[in-house]
Image (tube, rainbow, N blue to C red):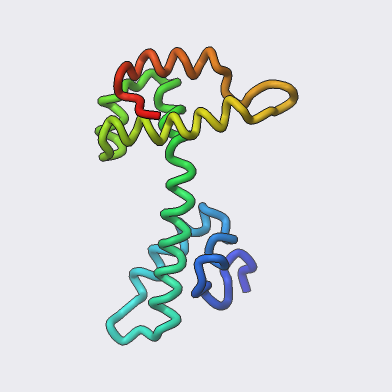
Length: 130
């Protein structure tokens, strides 16, 4: 038996949230493809729990990827096209993430420095909504 694959699929969000996010990416498509109109309650609940955990994980992860894209030279229109979200939503998500990162102390320094945040804010212009 492969220990990475659960013997029983999680049917609760709390259990699915404990699964490694990359494993969720592998498990969710298998669940969705295997489900049929005749699937039982546990199969449907497992797909719902896995997809809920995936959305929750990705919602937390996306702002750091927005920041990585900005560091790589993307501008706001690039990110809007890549995410399918509006400029104000992208800015709001990034700003909330950046606000936490500038207050996060790692070895006496913030995770993201305030100078970097201000430089990105200037690139956003009026697109950032706090």
